[in-house]
Image (spheres, helix red, strand yellow):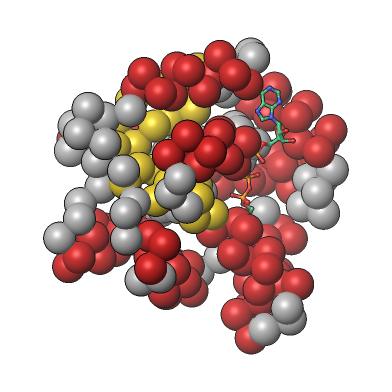
Length: 185
Ligand code: B4P
């Protein structure tokens, strides 16, 4: 199974990816987690990413695409993966399509978790990660609308896009995602 969980920051991509990992035994690949690990390790990549993350801006496409290329080459991704938080821009989506075409394993589906912005602000303030301050959250939501939302049309045109309402009971949302999975996944 090769799918993307798509949605605004705080829409529950990480939460739902964990459940799919438990169901299908394939890895969750979260660019947010990979970037936070690089920041914690104080690597060159982490130092380059930190300022953008603290401001709620996207880290450069070049950095993130390089990271994904390496991660998807690892043996555990051979049988599939759940991408969480990637792609977030058109160049990232195009790079992903190219990479998967090279591997002969195209993406099967993109599941969109739709959540109201005020619900997102409420959730992330309650989570309280270092980038979960109200001003940063609102900037992340604007960045999503501007740079990431256009990917919905990109994947709709490929016939790979499905919407799921991401509000309410976490287990019920998981069931909706299961129903929205592509039939060949
Ligand atoms: P991410 O780590 O991707 O952070 P996120 O979008 O906030 O998280 P997610 O949607 O997974 O929400 P979660 O399940 O945790 O990105 C952080 C930063 O990294 C970005 O701002 C950017 O700078 C950088 N970055 C990452 N990827 C990048 C890329 N591809 N390109 C460039 N830059 C990139 O859920 C959030 C909260 O809601 C949790 O507390 C959870 O418990 C709660 N929740 C979940 N489901 C719920 C429900 N149904 N009801 C109530 N609460 C719920």
